[in-house]
Structure formats: C-alpha cells, structure tokens
Image 1 (spheres, rainbow, N blue to C red):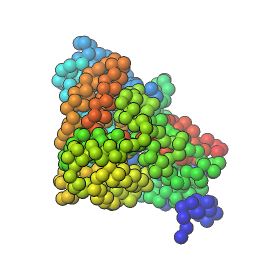
Image 2 (image 1 turned 90 degrees about the vertical axis):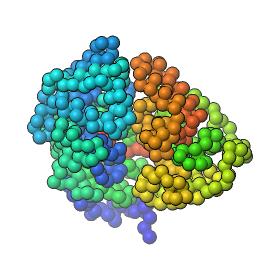
Image 3 (image 1 turned 180 degrees about the horizontal axis):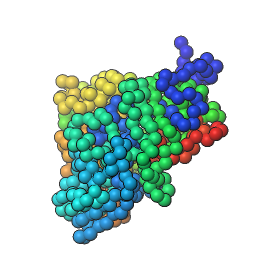
Image 4 (image 1 turned 60 degrees about the horizontal axis):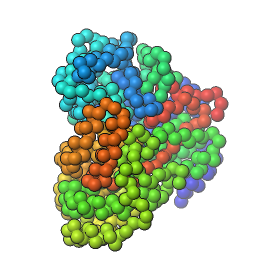
Length: 531
C-alpha cells in the first residue's frame, strides 16, 4: 500500500497530470484556488460556529467594526462613532456608498436586523442587548443604541472575530429565525457568492464584487482597514484526503491549503515552491471537557484533583507538535493575547502526583463506577488528545469506558444530557482557535450558566459574576485585573481543563503575497509573477 509520505515524495512524478475537478487551470492569476480545512456545510455564519463558514462569511459579508493586530476594534462599515449621556448612548454613522451584492444600499435598519439576529446566537451579543433599552435607525445612515447602563465594549462586540461574527446582511435575510439557516447569502463584502456553482461537499465559488468600496486610508490588519479584492474569482475545492491536497499544492493545481496534515509538514518544508506561514498568532488551545451534570465530575473536588495531574506538554507531544509549535503553561486566555496571565498556574510545577489524585478522588466519593470517555478516530490531533486523556484518567483510578467513534458522532453525542450509562458521556476532548478565547465575553468553555452553557453545562455563579464585571469595565488595566480573577476562579471551579497551545501553519504557493493574519482572509492577497 502506498503511504502518504511515499505518495508525497513521488507526487510530482506519479500524479503530475492530476487536476482537481472544478479548479481553474494552473497559472491563472485571476483566480485564487483554496482548499478549506472542512466542507462548507452551512452558508450561514450566524446559524453555525463552523470555522469554514466564518471564513466564507468574511468573503461575502462585512462588519461594522474590524479588529486590528493589537486586538482593538476599528471602524469598518462605520464612518464615525460617538458616545454621549455618560456612555449610555452610542451613535454610529455608516460610510457612504455601501451596497449589497443585489445593488441595494446598506441601510441602518439592515444593520439593526442583522445584529438582533446575531445576538440570539452569540454570548457577547446577548450581553450587549441585555444592556440595551432601544436600538433605532433615525435615518438610513445612523444607528443609535440607548443603553440601560454603560457598555464600553460595544465596538468590541460589533467587531468580534471569534464565532459568531456579527456580519451585516439585508433586512429580509436578517429576519430569518436565528435557528433556521439563510441559504442564499447576499452581503456587502468584497466577494459575491456564486450559488449556481456550489456543489455541496465538492466546491464553492466567489466573484469579485465590483461595487465594493474599500475603506479609504489606513492599514489592512486582521479584519480592519481597506479590503482590496485582488483576484477576479476565489474558488474553494473540498479535498478530504490530506495527501491528495498536498500533492495538488506542490503541483501548482491549488494555491492555498488551509490546514496541511501535521505528518506531511516535513515534506512540504522541502519544497521550494511552497510556503508555510503561521497566520494565527493566537494558535489553538486543546481542552478536556467534563460533564458537570453527572457523577463523578459534578464534584469540583474531583475535577480539581484531575486538573492538578495534567501536564500539557504530554498532550502536545502526543499530538505530534514539535517544541517550536507547542506551548505548555497555558491558562484560560491564549498566551500572547492581552488577557493572558500565569496566575494560579504553579499547580503544574513538578511531576504529577497520581497517588495523591487517587486518594483525593476516593475521599471525594468516587465509587468506581465506569466513566464514559469519548475518543475519536479522526482528526488525528483529537484522537491523540483522547488517548492520552483516557490514560491519565485511568492513572487517577477511574474505571474508564473508552468509546471510540468518528468526530461527527462525538458532535452528536456531546449534546445529550442523558446519564452516561444511557447514551450520555462523562468526558470529551476538542480544541478552540485562540480567536474564540480572547475575552470572557465569547469564551464558550468558560461559561458557568448551567443548562444554558456549552456542552458540559457547568454551573459557576462566581465565574458569571466576574464575567459581568469584565463586560462593564472600560479600563484595560481593570480588564486585566478581572481576567486574572477569572482565571483563578476557573482553576477552582474547573469548567474545563486546558491541555496546551499549538500552532499549525497554513500552506500556500510562494507566488502568493499579502496574506493577512488572524484567519483565512481573501482580500489584499495577490499573486506574484514568479515563485
């Protein structure tokens, strides 16, 4: 059987004639050919948190504010922003000349309807509208928020980059229930979605929107600044097999492979025509998520006993990350971001004491009943996390029932609240992009609001109180102080266990330049005449 590595090594010779169906011819510099990390299963970035749909959203839609490289919100569709009435009134003025892809102007009422729909699915949106008495459109270019109390993070909410993103769509689409999908996306972003070219599970295509007017002046950083659509078309092709996608990149049949397989990176690094930039300095953070509804992890003493024996580097090494691509000592907020702190992380100093953990777990009432740990056959990173985690829990004295399934089955099962012995679960493993964990506002794993929380459903009143305090704090130093308290409280309540940070490069042809940081963004990217 031909291995992936053998296929890569001989790819140019043995598969030189391979052309992925639907791709533009190699060398066509009017078209950017992209392979996303997963299929574009949904076109609605409000309905789903899927990363592929967020990237699609930034092609098609625009946002009122963008985020710069210092994680600060900057006006994007907004031309001017004014606070009055001691911070209880915000007036936003839209830029002139904004149009949707159907030719209709972007009006303030489109923005309000979009934000209201988004707020039903997003934690920070919910916090904003909980503080809002009224939002109105006195005319087509002005949006007025009248607040119950000051909400200094309003621009941060409207420019957030973590899922869900507050994209602006026409009012007729924004009136769709947030629990139903918009299936015919129309935005005001730099590219139009070509619905008639979409093949579910195979491809999606976008055409440059000639009616888009980039923001005048400023510097393009992350999702802020002028957006220039350099390519006439952007084509996404779904290629499930990592080796096939890597060969296509090396052969010049695609320009950009979002997520190359970790075991193929050494070969890609030997190819002089391929670059491997790290576009997301926030990386990704792996997590172990316990189910707080059922024993034994309904008991905080047991969760803390497990937390103390975790050694993040063990998980990161098992997942295959080299020392320069992994980081241990990771708390609640990603290293290198404004709220990151080492408060409380000394619990991981020294070797793990499994004897102590077993004593504490028995003393806290664990009776030896089986615990259901969900493992997965794919993707490889999650498989490695689950295998190491199941071994760690066994060392802690738990009777581990390790059940392996594909990732889609994990996604389905983790939503069940039934007892673990009746089809539920006790533990699963996943990872978030650092962008989703930047602040307490959108940090879904951190929420402690019981049945309304993310899968695992922790109840942590003190965490919720601190989150509210953070949302009302305008001073950056005050925000950092509260974030430190949040981390200490999270290490006490243990809504989840952080397992380390890792960085995965993207892969592209060296002919591409202008790639922005943050996530896959398709404006300002262009093709050079030579590699």
